Length: 88
Image (cartoon, rainbow, N blue to C red):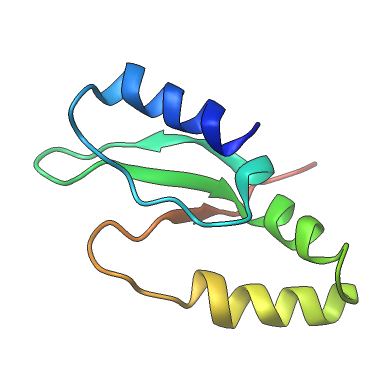
């Protein structure tokens, strides 16, 4: 999925509301989360984010970078959500 695809999806889904996106993680985008009386949030796969980072660094470095710089970054109440999926 490209950044443009995500923007079109958000515009069609949310109409006038905006969502803060995580730059560089377009291929890890899952969708939009909503909770009553709160702004909608972009949702990403943690595993896919780490996989994308692993293209540029070792797996261990990617995990550390993701945990500290991505999942650990708070940019206000619109901070994206990163989901750990259960795989059997």
